[in-house]
Length: 208
Ligand SMILES: [Zn+2]
Image (tube, rainbow, N blue to C red; front, top):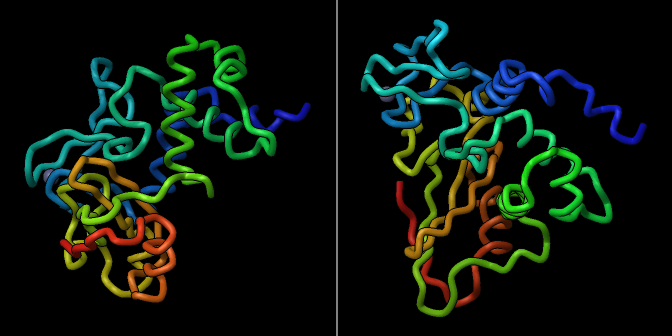
């Protein structure tokens, strides 16, 4: 009974899982993670097309909503990622990879990979800060979907409300990246995140 919420369709149906994530990541409609385009995008349909694939006719590249998220580039169905994220986020005591392996019916190795990625994304309080003395950490507040980013002026709609989905990223030279959904990019909104996630003594650079 405790997991009755897992009856929700997006936990079991791949189309519904994509629709669910798309509504969260793209409240104003799809945005191409390659070029930042948003006005010449079509959903790919047809039997041979994988679920959730869009094509951008500005840069001619295909993409899915999972690009740039912790759910990217894996053989794991999105509905299982959503289940795992829900279980990890809702369990007070935490869920072991072993439990995840049994609950989701994935291999132990896959369960370990999923919980590692999701925990990193949830940036629990005990997550070590990034960087360190003399190390460079870059702040990219135009990040949306991938490191190539989307410029703010390209963002659909204009006006303050259109930045509700702004994603802000901290990236180390070693390639570690953490992304945060923020409601705005003022110093007051970003500083607490920066303080909580970057080691003292890091060299912070602003890009984008
Ligand atoms: Zn594009």
